[in-house]
Amino acid sequence: MEKINYKNLPNCIRLTNGAVEIIVTTDVGPRIIGYNLVGGENILGVHMDARVETALGEFKPFGGHRLWMAPENMPNSYAPDNAPVEYEFDEAQNSIRLMQPPETVTKTRKEITVTLDKNGSGVEINHKITNFGDEKIEFAAWALTIMRGGGVCEIPNEPFAPYGGETLLPVRNLTLWSYTDLSDSRWQFTKDFIRLKVDSEKTDPQKIGVLNKQGWVTYRWENLTFTKHFEFIENALYPDMNSNTELYTAGNFAEIESLSPLRKIKPGESIEHSERWELKMKG
Image (cartoon, rainbow, N blue to C red; front, side):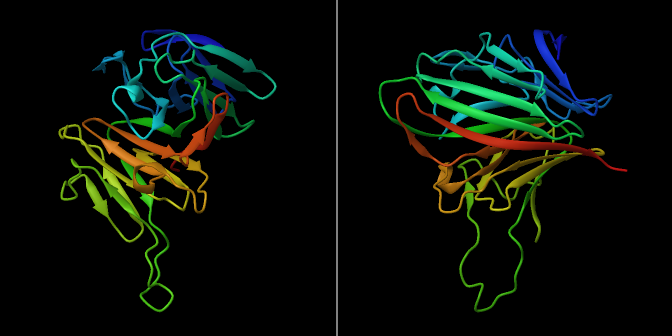
């Protein structure tokens, strides 16, 4: 563990296992602001000047990876998280736990725990949201990762099978937003993948959601491939018309998002959602 300044954010913490580096913030968040092979480029997008004005104050995305509650709601989803977080470092596990103060409006507390593999690029990201209120609330954990511009997102399609007696029923949903335009050149639909290309010249937003039973999604940038894995839970109800994977872009970045099932959480209880990250270089 090493405390550093990163992109004008003081008191960031860098973890490494010699193969990969993770940088987290402690003055804001919880956030993961950097993920790169040692000596390599940060695959995450950093947007220090971005901001959204809400009834609860100014929300700053900062970039990188964050944790929200789904379904999306204005202003509650955009509750500012610009205050310092508590953190605990576990040297034996090469792990850090980031804990936000309870939010006064949503009455919840967000936590992210980052654990590096002993070797290689693998990282476990555990997300936890605890109900600190007096009433039961229904929500899902929503893990959003902002990727740097210039790459392509890929969601795997379900395995192809020819038409016949065993393939009469659908195998996947496709969720669209009112601003989704499937004729936009950033979209590509093939037999094996749904792809979304980042184009800095096109700032109008595009978004889709799917029920991704394969449990992974990738982002390809130059010679790097970022992959996040997550559990698909059979017969669970997910947010956004049953979507556990979502893609979003609006200009020179993309968001790769995974979601947990919707659950009703009693006061004092928590919902958790885990991802596993990998970063590989061609050649």
